[in-house]
Amino acid sequence: MDGGRSGHSGGVDILLAATAGGPDGLASARGPARAAPCHGTGQALIAHPAGGTLEVAAVYEEHFDFVWRSVRRLGVAERALDDAVQEVFIVVHRRLADFEGRSSLKSWLFAIARRVAKDHRRRASRKDRTEALPEVLADPHARSPLEGAERAQAVRLLYEILDSLDDDKREVFILAELEQMTVPEIAAAISVNLNTVYSRLRAARQAFEKALARQQAQQRRGQ
Image (cartoon, rainbow, N blue to C red; front, top):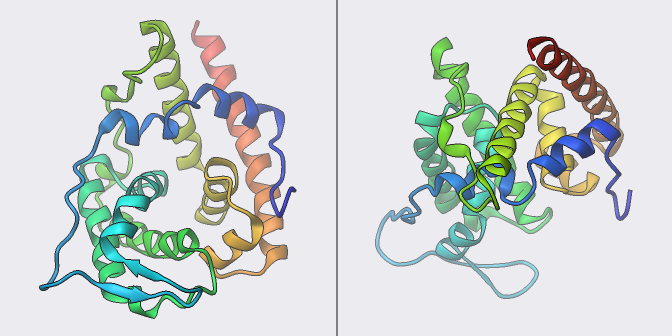
């Protein structure tokens, strides 16, 4: 792993290549509303331990897509995404002053998104949890309708496989494979040690490969 990163295995490479070109086809295709949360008067301006300041609006603007992708990848239903993202940034507004810079900001944000996603999934009905991805996920920037349809199919497959993973595997897979975060960043985001991250990531890749092989076999039988 370069600086704590590691390469993909074969099946992972193939699927991630198919979904490349927009953050797994989600944020770019959906184009969610981006009105920054406003709580109280005045703009929160927080001194950063490494120097400079952190502004809530700037954190929102820079990391909105990351938070949106994360809560969706963590299993929040499509209809609840806007509420979940808003909840994350309400927590950010309330707790940004407590951010001490001991981890990356993305690690800190993912830890919040992770808790919000778990709360949403607990509250969701079975119908919400198994909600299919909408057809609008076809990439509007694809060079051809066929390419857009193929990418949408790959995105759908990616999410079906993510839904089949348990939380421990799903979280490390999202951060390592989809967000390309380092092992130390992942460890900080999910509050485990480095060896645990490596162990979970190996297991997640194996589970992903097996699930991908099953899905591909089913598709071939259905042709």
